[in-house]
Length: 311
Image: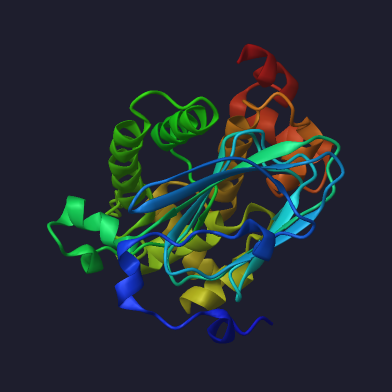
């Protein structure tokens, strides 16, 4: 296991007024091609390109917040780790957003792909949050996110991409405005100030903390969802008691909730026409295409192929 503490650099508060400049050559092997960059007092941006057939491994532990944007996706698939938990995906869909907070560890391994892809890297100094929080950015606690699911943030990052590829006459002013917008979206989607799911206790159901933890475990990793026994152990309950109380709280059993969640995620993935239904089935935790099709039809009332044609 990676020793995260050994990889973190000492914190020098005096450097937090400006964003770290990501030396891509330091983190990427083989070397990527830088095709555009910009810099402001609080942010550094760089657009890099990986050629067809390239594999790469990147490791980050910065004093700045890091946003990675994959406008072309990553067709060869990738693996990532925060030093304690690891996961993988057969591919990353276009416009995937990855966020790594300051002082957090992230390792991302890109497998060999049959198509080239671009990656926009933005590093943002934590002091930039003072414009949103009246000089008290320490009140915001960010969390690492692999695949931020927010359409507004994707549009903002596409605007960054357009500006770095075709800069306008007022680039600095425009980029500063985009940065303020991006910071607001990060606070909303990846921090303790984000929208919280309101969990209401129902008589006979799970207490709020147990229900929240159960949902986190069921939604945390589609391909590695816990069994009912493991879920009950984590919540310190008997499996039968957990199943009964969960259904009282959510209206469905844990297993049914997991299937509904997997199908909903599959529907979102189907928007990307480049992803095959087989890949989507695997990424959503189904053992086979036939199981995926059977469950999807039972829940959605149509086959995955029919649903994709309707989009």
